[in-house]
Amino acid sequence: MSFFTTERQTPTKLVLCGAVVLCLSFVSLGECQTSPPPPLPCSSFKNCDTCVPHAKCLWCFTNNNCTEYPVSWLLPPASVCQLAEARWGVCWLNFEALIITLAVLGGAIILSIVVCCCYCCCSCCKKRRSRPDGDDEIFARRREEIKQRAEERNVERKARHDQIRKKYGLMSDSDHPYSKFENE
Image (tube, rainbow, N blue to C red; front, side):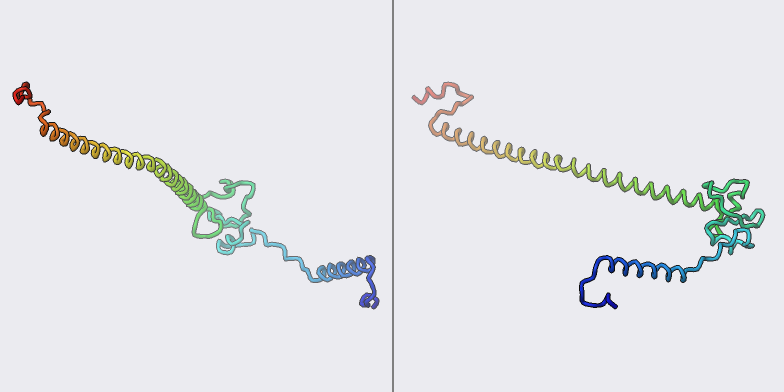
């Protein structure tokens, strides 16, 4: 019981104690473990409902037998079973329909992603292009307003000048070019 005293522990005693605890834990784990039973071969299953829940098994309706899925091939070859007669995962869906369904779903997902990306890109580009157009329209509208006000001021100024010329007799009369001399 010298481990539990208040005197200073040496590193060798601590390492020795740790090694003993580690060994005991491995020994106790080894005693509790049991090996799983070996998996049943696919040929032991006699109907589709018991065969297809196992991912490694494939049911073929042509010869009503359960065989191992040929993992070296992506799709089971015709020598194992025709695609229209092969069942994997569920009994109610043949392999051919499963492949077509997955291809259509995958294509639809990819197509929807592409459409969404194109829509987002086009809407962003339109927003970028519309800003300068909007600014150009505002600028053109302001320029027209300024031109109209300037024209109005010119007309008012000309009218005032004409009144002053008329008042002092400086206005040229187109009917009588020498009317200025008649008043003198």
